[in-house]
Image 1 (cartoon, rainbow, N blue to C red):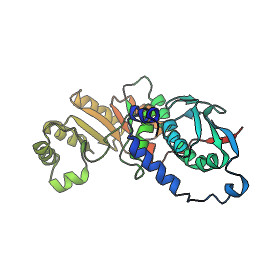
Image 2 (image 1 turned 120 degrees about the horizontal axis):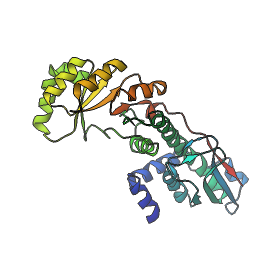
Image 3 (image 1 turned 135 degrees about the horizontal axis):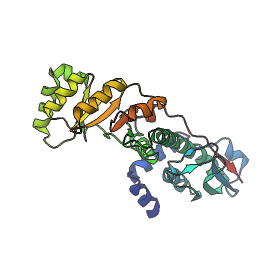
Image 4 (image 1 turned 180 degrees about the horizontal axis):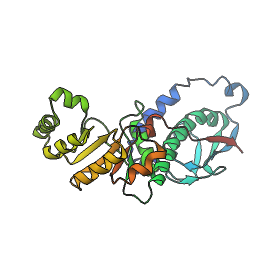
Length: 285
């Protein structure tokens, strides 16, 4: 990997070695031989092509796709940057090199680009829907195994905000924790006794639980499956003493109504677990 690409990945908040390993694993899935391309083209034949957007949206994954190209000795020139809004017909990346290599790189690069751009596009739609409010869309741990860092990066490209990256960097007291511990207060106190400075969020199903969480000292509260009226009341009750995040059954059509209640975040697992791929194609020129 070139130093320039490694720096680009680090600036995006991605681990270059982890991305390299993921791309190598993806390429390995295709096997050693390309029984379609190798009989048709000699190793010396070369081609050029463009990865082109076929719909409106937000691009993400350009430096990740670049890892594919570098591993296969394909020359590439980015024409768009991650986070850019793009339109149909807009060239995202131009490539050139041995025809066999281009065809081997095509699907792996597209799998990454279309998936990550789909997430970024979805995040941007939520962000646009809430424009003018203080609320931000936030992702969850509902990610595909092995792709969490990339998926959460794509959320950032679309204007969204990341929640915790794993179980290690932030505590989230959910209903099962409360049921097993006996109460919100007991669960919160147990975490604080071990991790006095850790960010702790408490999931609350009722306004009574919100009051209990506040009394326990919680600075972050997840409002789970509450109505807009209940969330507005929670905002009034909390009065800025804790950040509030709406969660459960949220849809894009409902995004603005939830945002205007005054919550700080909307938790949307669908950003990563159900994102539709963004339509991109490679066309030889």
